[in-house]
Length: 319
Image (tube, rainbow, N blue to C red; front, side, top):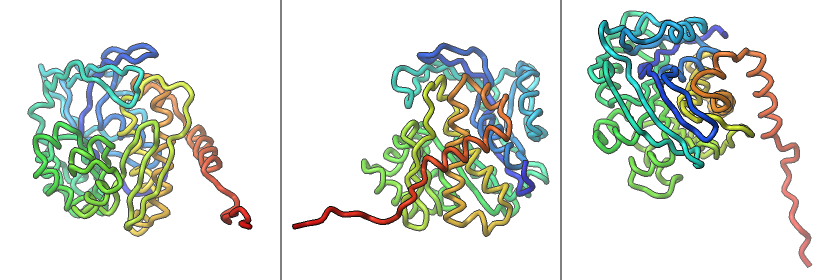
């Protein structure tokens, strides 16, 4: 882990049951804050604020603690049940079908930050209620970098609150379906520009197996997904991407470095690499067994795949 800025993440810690064409997992470790923190922890110190029930398995807690993730902000509600999600993926691995959602203790979650959490220079507001995201920001001291994610449910039910929140956000992560729904614009590129006018310095449009688009300083940058031959479970890939992206920026340290286009581009590559590991197994299993040497190797390989040696344009001779 590099010495840099710490990251506060506020979001869900859950138990997921997932079926994909490759098999299934039951009551596995999941949740937006979980995937994000495991990914980001390879680059920076991570502070988690969330809530679980007393039924949350100790083995899952150990997974996070073994990555030196600070769980002092993870509330445990006695006699309560942990948030559960049940879903499945068909042949189209870009779309999950939700079968059951049991909010349980997460339904009444109200984040209360401790002094160290309030002073974190980087904060990621995972896809929770925009009003809760506002509550978290109101408790922060002076964060240098604020990023958030969302989901269709909040776009449909609390669009005004989300739009207002974006005026305070530096980096916004959103997928193709969400960006169209939020802006009411079918063209993804135009939709991204609309979002940038609402406040974010950087808009990251996640495109699943087709990579991501990064809009920064008026320019789009396209990144493919790292090629994975055997995708097992896409659950959590988006949050893992965000974790690699912000984790890298936080590890870079200074707020100046966080706002450099080349750094943002490198952050996108780190996010893609981290997400490529997550999809190779169910739940967080692949991230649990990951070592820094594996990241370095895949990062270098990805850069090689992206590189074009000759920048010249060769046109056919006319006449």
